[in-house]
Amino acid sequence: MKAMQKGFTLIELVVVIAGGISSAATVNYAARKASSSKGVAYNSATPCGTTELNSIMQTPLPTSGYTFAQSGTMDCSVASNDGKAASCTVTPTKGTAATATVICVQ
Image 1 (cartoon, helix red, strand yellow):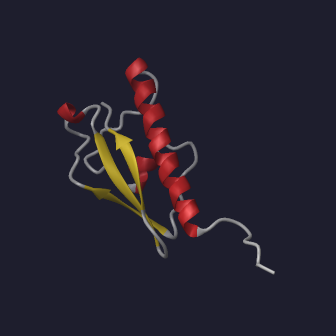
Image 2: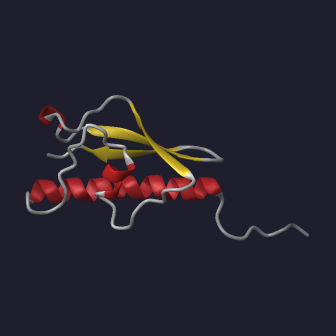
């Protein structure tokens, strides 16, 4: 008889975290563009830092077991980068990394 898996695999959790970041960034961008009093100005020079990512999340990201790093050199503090995307890599201590996309918004 085949053993039945219980719970989630690590890659499934990483993909959920990366998807959550991308989803939150999209909603935040749309809200901020609709009204400057809504959403959060996502204009950091380091858009993939844990503090910056947590500013757009409703629930804080896990701080242990994962690292968040920027892929590329997008600087969201530059006004001309408004609306451009920055790629963030979510890497667990064990397992496969996933990529999340955040959108710069002034």
